[in-house]
Image (cartoon, rainbow, N blue to C red; front, side, top):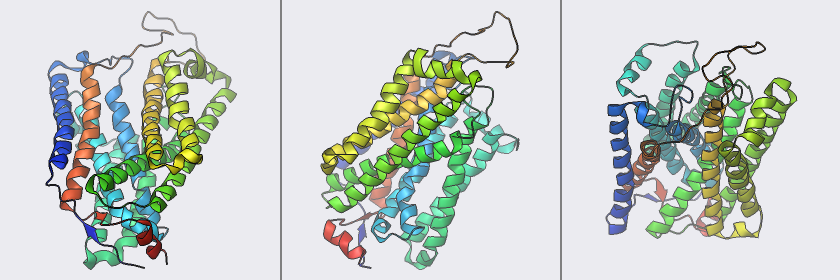
Length: 400
């Protein structure tokens, strides 16, 4: 296989520092929002004692799920031994770490009292998926960190496949754990399904690859390095497969729910009567997040790089809409305290709960995205993560 030269991004231009500063501004606003919410409490958010997970959780879960999927490219290179993907692997690993860091920071800063994290990290309830996820997230950092080390340090390169395989298996377990947070939660009608774990895995593939493609294309365009059509087309078709799989799982999930009479009310809320939630499901999740990207990626439009990047943006927007419907929609639907029993009280019986995210919640969520981008932007400057060239001729040599 031909050798590839990796080099840091110079990062001394005005354009680089403007990008760094622009992203940093969102981090600053996110931090100020955290301080505001920490000082005044969750009363300044749109959350209440019915909708306890708000917009920051939507961003946090999206980033955590995408982190697992961002490792796709590296996994294909190391685990499945595909030469073309090997030069792309270091960026894949650092992006996975950055997205997980961004998502977890949003989660921690949205706790209300972030100092309570110490309790969560020192007192374990092993019957709870939340406890298991503490170990899964920590393990992901360790394994992907070691995997990245084996890729960057030639003295330990012999261990790349072992480290890559371990990281690959761990990321599947991690996303299963994230999906199981909802799948094992039976209090809400729309949770409590074994389908959520595998659905979260395939969602991670699509979200992570869409983000990876955007970062890769931007890195090469802004540094003037050649990026050929072969790489873009391979990743484009891979993204189309993942998006189609997400759509398939969503259809099967809702058809399965509709088979059971007890789920008809909850499904009607999401699919027909839920107002903004229903609009987000059909327009955001299905049309924007799945149908339009598939049309772009599988037709002549996909031959143009700009349209592939548009498809990636749509997948990301659709993914955020999907998490919003999953997290907020399920909480907005009335809680059924005693299934099959008649219950009367004056406390929100049968009431659909309203939720409107406040400005600090938006900035806290966007701050997590900005942290992930800031880490990646800094990493490509100090580490040799990007090949000098990925033009078609270079890629062809890799595969022969």
